[in-house]
Image (tube, rainbow, N blue to C red; front, side, top):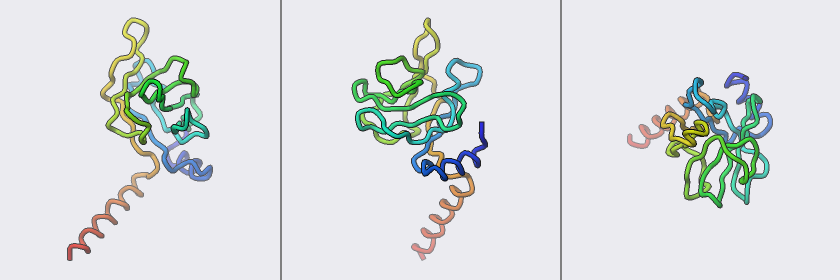
Amino acid sequence: PASDDALRARLRGEGRLQGSVRLLGRSEQRKQASINGVYALSKGGLEGAPAYEKADGSVSRYIFYSERKGRWKIAERIDDSVGNFAYAKSKSSAPLGPSLKWMVFDGKELGHTEDLAVRCEPFELDAAEAGATDSAAASAGASAGA
């Protein structure tokens, strides 16, 4: 898989960096570790809600919102009728974020079980850009208070 910087550069060049997210935390030793990765907004979606496509080229994975089920789902394609690797209940298709609780498929015996380590966070900014934004905000706040 591409490095974060290379992936950011590619997504920026394709005009798909804005809104991209990273799903992380699934242990590599467990089933469905392939859900980990960077996802960029995908053309289309399901019933007007946004969808995301895994962007590193490793495997076909999509995150999309199912209005019918009231949840974000991760599956091999954007199709509400197929099984999924993981899901997170949500009352709306509001942007993906770290507050979602992910239920990940752990095999036929266990079904979907909650994995508290799995979370979704913005991918757009690299550490330097995020730090620059934080320090700019801090200095703006300091000068506003002066």
